[in-house]
Amino acid sequence: MAVTMDGVMGHLHHASGSTGVVFCSPWGFDALCTVKFHRLIADDLARRGFPSIRFDYPGEGDSLPVEEGATFATWVNAAVQAAAELRSRTGCTQILYYGMGIGAAVALQAGRQDDKLAGYMLAASALSGRRYLREVALREKVIEDGIGIDFGYPPGSTVLASFIMDPQLAADLKAVTVAVDTVSPNLPVLVLARPENAADRDLAEALSAAGASVTCTEFTGYGAMLDGVVTSPMPMALIETIGDWFNRAIPAEAVSRPSDAVEAEPMMLSTTSFREQAEIVDTRLFGVLCQPASGTESAVIILLNMAYAPHNGWGNIWVDTARTLAHQGLATFRVDLSNIGESPADPREPDQVVYSETQLNDVQAVIRHVRSMSKAPILLAGICSGAHSALYAGAANSEVAGIVSINQLRLVLDPDEDVESLLMAGARPLSDYKRRAFSLGTYKRVLSGDVDVPKAARNIASHAKDRLSRGVSPYLGGLTKLGRLRGQLFGILRRLEERKVPVTFISCRTDGSLDQQQLYFGKSLSGQRAFQGLKHILLENADHTLSPPAIRRQLIDILAEAAVESSRRG
Image 1 (cartoon, rainbow, N blue to C red):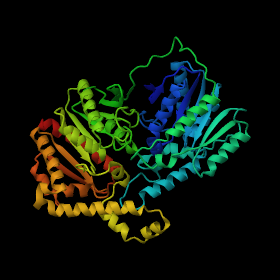
Image 2 (cartoon, rainbow, N blue to C red):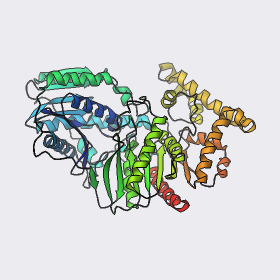
Image 3 (spheres, rainbow, N blue to C red):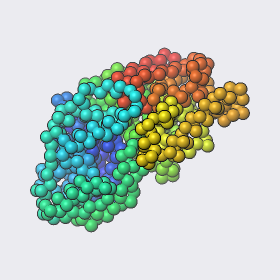
Image 4 (cartoon, helix red, strand yellow):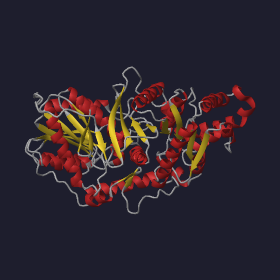
């Protein structure tokens, strides 16, 4: 259940127990990768009788920006406020604070202000702000290395995977060091320690020396979870272990819900330029409708998930896009499809939902929901797999007035292609494989075992096969697989053309999306001229996730123009 607290957006998990749990998330990219993990933990704890609340820090995720700039104290105050909200809504009396990454520092500081502290759960903890910022800088350097573009981040900024930290917060964190020598005697503490990370085990020992009752458990699946949001592996056994620890360490006393408990209202956040409200589609799919402050929109753009990235998007791209477009009179609906972010899996469907019929059915449900709220033209927009969903769901629904496909790596999904392998292969053009193949650094990484040679070979072979098929398919037509797949794509585009639905393909040089366009439309993209409503835009100096701020501003302009074109053609 979505709740709001003075501009902060949260999610409440009801239960009748006397001990509640406040989740203090990591920052930025790590928060993006762990939304689903934390939702599953909170759901499991609620089933065991522990009410929980998760929230986005002020200025992060779905929460409103902080005009004067966020600080570490701003985050700690938000955690304290979340605890008060949890108590008022559920009647729980004591609070256990969970913190991951820099959120562990937030959890410890918030717990010190709570006179009915039940304990802590600390995961992959970062208690020194200065050390944490150094680690962030190192991780970002690894991400940027070899991509070959100018990201154009503000000078001196703290960035990780296109998440840009509030400069005031970054400056504030340099002075943050949270000690653990003042914890209450016998306080229950669960430490989730990263494999082979001595600092996490040192923390457990320091807490024990201070008198806490500490259990240290290996954070299994940590590396895979924070490797991105491509396949979204969840350590279900660890979630069970966490729940079992709660049952052993925390008294399971039930309390009555207070008679003056605050009833949940629709989640609403507003500023002078936009207003946002949480929506549940078909009782299961979570989304946020962002409208102009006037309440009147000229179009609604549905923003779809990229792989398993939650609805706020990589680098918060969909939140920033939604709020900027609202200022221009356009509404958006950012949504988590099944088994992504805040939306649970459909128990009747497989867990792997990317490129599946399940996702296309979800998109149809979202379109119906949006139509029930607005009479304005509806557009679909997505990045990568979200672009695939936009194209195919849009072709099948007469309510869709426009489609924007961004960096779509598969214009048509080959039925013989393994989706799991496709997702794990990542985004990389053939030219990049060729360049790396002749790099001395690549040879060194192969010898050290850092390169998955079989996977790289399969990816190169796949690109080479595409090149060969591209050369012969025009002469053999439907006799080749590529010819049949091209016929499928062109059939979709013809149906959209008949409905006067404009389609905008956006691609860049660094991820393989341009290769895909050339595979189906020819090296010069001359095949696109057969479709009057089709437009192709090549973004220079862009990566797959559109990290550079200048590229994101360009995308917003493209989406606004697409909305105008959809209204004109319709």
